[in-house]
Structure formats: structure tokens, C-alpha cells
Length: 234
Image 1: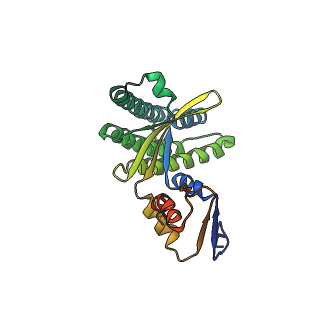
Image 2 (image 1 turned 180 degrees about the vertical axis):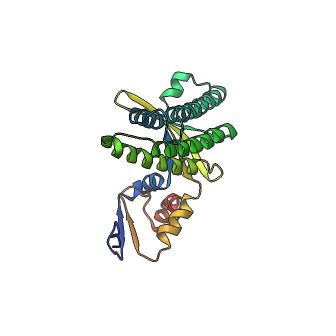
Image 3 (image 1 turned 90 degrees about the vertical axis):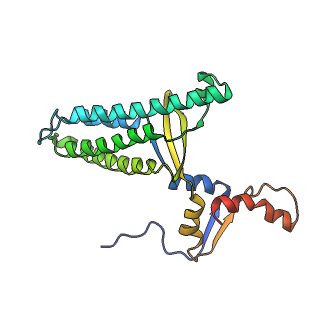
């Protein structure tokens, strides 16, 4: 039986609050990896798997290696940022920690860590799927295998360093602090044009703040939307 589409058939799209559209597009087309998700996933897998899989792979050891690669990746990115900002802007480590978004480059060492994470995530998935777990933990294992699969897809996206713009994001939820390596494609405008604007379906973008021109007149209004048109691929 074919699945129903998420949206019903439509002949017109109206996007309200369109000044937030770019942010939503970055979220949809972007990819991220946080420094807390792999350790959390590893703790769960260690909790319901035995030491070795049926084929003899040491699940806990591979999981530990995966967590270690995540730690080394974020330590490397943090050290890279600190050195650059301390040298170029004279910021202290405390001031750097307070910044929400920090530009970061994906150099060969970072790529090596991402490559190792990808390989180890595959090993963990294979070993976990082959391990004996109690009946009441099978759903947890299925969820972990799905998470490992999604992790692999995101890491593959992060490895496309020539196609992405990267930054490191400091976050805090309650008392929990975390960091996220984020990336969006450099050709986001082209992607939006291909996927949306060139589809032959009328689309209306409406917003009170889509243009910040503030000058009355047809030519001024046209100029005021220049930035929005460029970033959204219109």
C-alpha cells in the first residue's frame, strides 16, 4: 500500500513569516553533530549489551573508541578556535566560551576524526546487532541502530568540507552545556531554487520584515528585497 504524502496535493504555497524562511532552510538542509550525543548513545549500548557479540567482537571496546574519537574531534576544534581568536582578536578563553557561534575550519585532522567516527559507528552497529540483549531491551537496540545509521549519514555530510560552511555552536539547556559542529551547503540558494522556486508552482512569501529598506518608492522596494532574493535563490 503506497504511503500518503506528508502534504496533500497543492497548487499554491503561501509562506508566512518569510523572514524566518532562511533559518528554517538552513535547519532543513544543514547537518550537525553535538559533543554529547555519541557518549550518551555509547552509555545506552553498554547498558544492554554483553561484552562480546556472537561473532566475538568486543562491543564495549568499540563503543569506547567511538566516544574517544568524538572527544578528540571537539577538543581539536576547540583548540583551533581558541588559538585563532586569541591570536587575531585577543579574546580570553572565558570570552570565547561565551560566544554562541564560532567559525571553524575542517582541516585534515578534523577530517581524520570524522572518518574514524564513520568507520567506528558502522562497527558498533554491526556488533550491537549481533549481540544478545534481553527481550525488554530489543526496542532500545533497534532505536540505537537507527541512531547509528543517522549518525553515519550526518558524518558523511560533514565530511563534504569543500561544499559546506562550518561553525561551532555553544549551547546550554538548563545546567547542561554542549557544543555542536554545524554545517550548511555553500550552494543553499541554488538548492532552494532547484527544489522550490523552479517547480512551476506559485509561491507567495509574506512578512512585515522581509525587506529592511524603509524607503517608499517602487525602486527602493525592489532594492530592499535584493538581499532576500540572493540568499533564498529567487
